[in-house]
Amino acid sequence: MKKISLNSQILIGSLSGILLGAVLSTLDKESAASQVSLYIAELLGMLFVDLLKMVMIPLVFTSIAVGVANLRAHNKIHRVWKTTLGYFFLTAIVAITLGLIAANLLKPGKGLQLPMFQDAMENFQAHEMTLPEFFTQFLHSLFQNPIAAMAEANIIAVVIFALLMGIALVIGGERFQNIRIFLQELLELVLMLVGWIMKLAPLCIMALLIKLVVTQDFSLLMILIKFISLVIGTILLHALIVLPMILYLVTGMTPIKFWRGAREALITAFATSSSSATLPITLQCAEQNLHVKRNIAGFVLPLGATVNMDGTALYEAAAALFIANLVGVDLNLMQQMIVFFTAMLAAMGAPGIPSAGMVTMLLVLQSVGLPVEAIAILLPIDRLLDAFRTSVNVEGDMIGSLVVQKVVESDVNQN
Ligand code: ASP
Image (cartoon, rainbow, N blue to C red; front, side, top):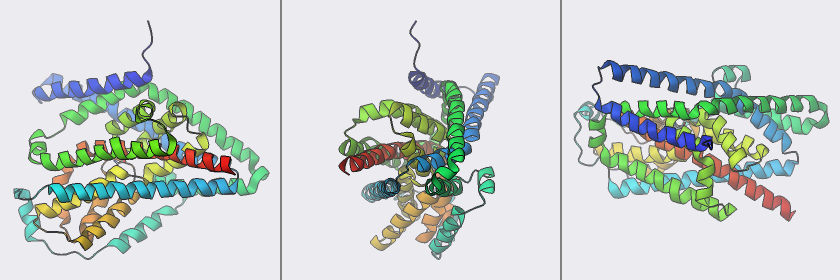
């Protein structure tokens, strides 16, 4: 009998997860069958995410340090850097613009009366902009004691330290040959563990999706259906049209080919709501299925998992306008520009973990004086929306690695 590929197993696992979750939701929540099934699903999901987190930090550190060290020629590093940042900014700008346009056109939350908002509205007063504070905090998180950063899974600080080590390895050259080879072997070793963890993915993703479906509050989802559809619709527009178009224009790769190769990572991102936890699988898919060179993937993907979040940026902009409508405030053009920039900063500052966007969302709300208490209405629906934004965040990273590879290759060929 032909063995089903892991890719297809993951697809089957995720569809069964959604289906089983839907069936479980119809059962009595107190029944033993329902409680036991949910407990097992929670346990499996937790173990899978724990396993991914276990390999995440060693993987980020080694892949970036080795990636940079192997991009030996200085001008190549320069080129990779510039293209990566250019791509991150460009796609974030497009994503936020889409979010703002959609929210301005559809005006979600206008005229919606929610009792839980009365207090927030009564206490409403303009807050001072805390952008400088946020900025300082963001800068402060960049350079940290690497051991502490690793222990706390502070990825951005680990990324920066690994980048510096990689650059030093390049400049030091032959002198640090042994360390470079050691890191390279460590990376291969960690990737071997990732391969084992991936074998559990079909079952564990099924478990994560069962939990996702069962824990939704469907009555609240129906009340906020307009806002939810707007966010999901706009995210899909970005994911299915904008990003694939950039990919096709730059690399000539068709979206179908891309999705086939990226599927495991996109589904894992959806199920875990964490770009960072998905990173091991993202790297694996980019290298093995999409043939991105390890040096490029090892640089672009870990960096992207923490700073490149199109889905989060789009969401934060749209959600700020939604809350403004809910509390009856009209944001003028200038205020929407502030939302634009803070959403960009907030998405960059958000770590790739579940609901991180909710925390940095406070910054966006505060920057235009919206009541931060309003976050209460977003929290119950966040798990669902987070699944979508995380998938597009990861998609953006993977397309970024393909775009950077193409640009750098054509550059080298020209020289
Ligand atoms: N969960 C998202 C991620 O990991 C971040 C967020 O929007 O909350 O990419």
